[in-house]
Length: 253
Image (cartoon, rainbow, N blue to C red; front, side):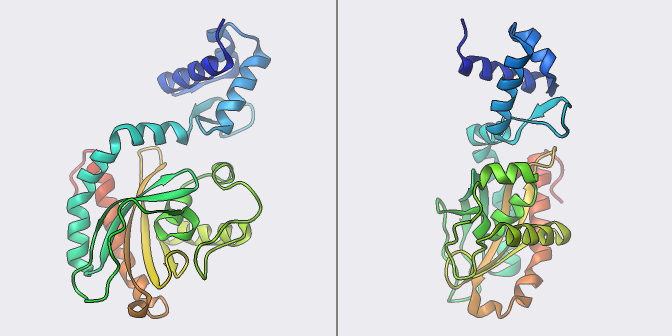
């Protein structure tokens, strides 16, 4: 007799193979009752392995499946795809460029090139982990997620900040992510590491899930009130689009 964990794994495999699946189909495939199938899907949904866009509708592949696939073998391909783009972006703006990935409620810097145009600059931060909502790249990726997925990743009513201007409430985060979606990029002015400003744009999968983010960071002293930061945004957005095209096998442009 299969355990609940084994049943749940089979559910994930089924939805991955088929793309979408219903409660009755799960019940038939696993030879379990409809109520058991519903509980299994609810468990998988809570963990992010499946998603349901409307009540009573079919279940589809959830973001956690993409995260696992990405973590397994895409880190190398992502770095390969991003490396020349980060180099070109650094050459264009002269500031430190980085690539981030989303890990639960945090982001991890997986690649970084130090700026070369100024003596005072942001040092590379490969391996550094920060709360996603406290970084420009993290906010750019969070803006790609549904409200339900955001709540799953960031449970609770208050958010833990690390910087002087970190977002600490859900209303503030919701308003910020609305701005990010509208303009296509996110800003960070002293919200994470002290004295640093950054602009980030998301790299999306073919289904719209956030795969990574491209970020340019510089000392706040050089960014003023943020106007200089906004001036960097078009280059960052284009760099993210180039990485996205490279990951999909299309000409990078």
